[in-house]
Image (cartoon, rainbow, N blue to C red):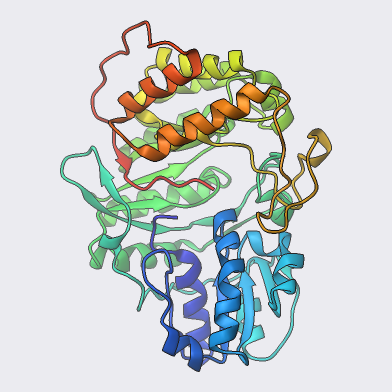
Length: 419
């Protein structure tokens, strides 16, 4: 996910406190240490996203070959919804939701529920042994590059968006990480060189009282530290009076899962905002002086060519081209096991290797466009503006016929998150 993972550091602290010897390995940064794997009693893989789960299934045979007797576990958001595939791969324990206690108990030889939503008393994450923060994403566009850290002040979400992988696990619940734990975690990352913090909460305003007290305390202690958060369009409008507090405490930008500018698609997703709400949120954020970084599900079974072109034109008219990571132009709707969208989409049978229900657009030209845009984005040639112009040309079979507004460089992380 481009960040030093809370999902390794937090359970590592729980396991070490219980007396276990733990080695944390981030395979997005380092090679698998075969000698350590061969000597392990238990091996647990963190699966916070779809891609990680697909890669894990490819890794399990290698782990079993290196260490046939090790007990295997998988934990994180995508573990419970892919339980069948994981068990077929030889995984003994599958844990989701608030997994730290369950993982510790399993390592101790006990058993517990697959998904736990209990309210944990967290301990300070133990980041020892992980790659240093400067090996992860950096903040760009805000003076000289800044080393970025990562933490979580809450998990789960109060909302039930149909396309979201959080919903099948948390079902409308969210759980906070205690303020003193979050501050201690940030403190240790600052000491390790972090100058900016990403809060990985699914929605920072699920509990605005908790969140604002946290960033106010953070700003008092580290007035030069900047941060970014993720907030729903719905919450940006509902809690507009709180946005100046974010700005005043060092927030540089807010990521928001806008997903679409087509109200019919937004209704299918149960996003609880409209195209007009998005436009209002853009104006509101500009008024406050916060940058909005929208994300989209650009290709869905319901996205027409006219609709895709409208997305591009809307983003251009709102002056947001520089605010959108190029990968967002190519995102295709993912329908994993347990998706609440299944009753709304005609899919092919479940693909156990890819862990998705594949779908084909009713207009073959849209699937061809999706592939073409993916290649443009993957080539990564040029600035955000230049890539946007290439995507526009692919969608219109013509060069862009109007001038994009000149805007100052915006702050962004050079390894954007996506599923």
